[in-house]
Image (cartoon, rainbow, N blue to C red; front, side):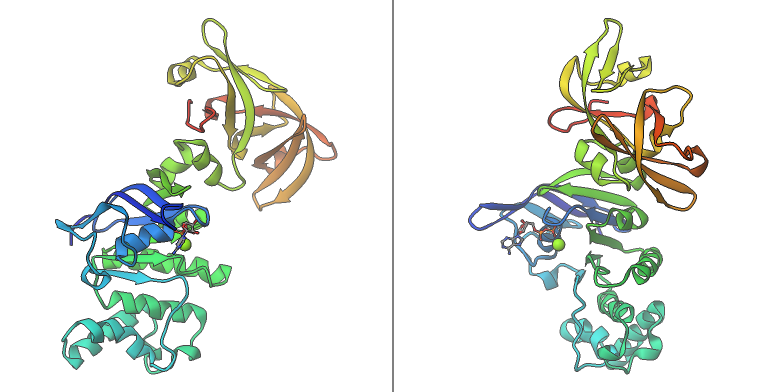
Length: 362
Ligand code: ADP
Ligand code: MG
């Protein structure tokens, strides 16, 4: 049904005082599963509302296929919106709820409508509930009805704004898997909003990380985890969070040393080639918890163990070194028993460096 494009979308509120989203450039292919991910208030809902036509942007353009849609009404955009809160009509049967959009916008025959509703209900596993009223259903079943209402419209794309946030953790996990399978079957674009990075990583083929009204990075789950473009993405993605420590980068003539308050190490030749800066202070060193080695043969520094959080096969070990808090994720056998102090090394080839503006230098 065509590619969806958002070009330089900007939306403000309160006479420009609040910039809800800006410089939004996004291309969504017809079978993409795209997740908009970012903290609360970063502009995800506003971006989705602009795309759907519920909000009109201050500037920028929206295209669906070859047609400009920036100022078209929501119902003319061929997009289906599934909201955060489950908004079913309590006085209508499940069947009527699902058929609602078809009743409003098409002149399909009653038989055709019934057939479409039945097909969709079957895909969602709620076929036997069509004659019930919504309040006789569980939360997960109600959210399936909301999805069904969107699916019968056979839209060019589904827009889902934190659709599972009202569900408990276990049900949420299950719905994630279902939605992912459903999207593959439907071969229709989905744009899914969440503030939950784990949800984003499991769902998205393409993740759009937002902060402070702007897109920070667009990439596969692998890319945003392993190759963050800036400090925000490096910190926001991954749990426990990436360790960040202030350092200076000091030239040694042949290369560079990274100098922290309690350690110093040289960059490898390969890292020197990749490094985008010169000698400078006010640099943040980022290193993921899995790249801290405890009880290491080569010791960079000593740290005190404060708390050990069991996570099954691997544990999160909280450390303190020179007043800085650090976290390591490590196999249990690497955690020294009975001692409070442990030697720590970084996997140096896995470190990141960010400049004072958070842009990645290495
Ligand atoms: P998110 O969905 O990522 O939590 P939103 O898009 O809802 O973020 O909001 C982005 C920013 O715009 C927030 O600061 C929010 O308070 C503000 N905002 C959203 N809608 C309105 C509105 N109708 N009036 C005023 N401010 C708004
Ligand atoms: Mg929101």
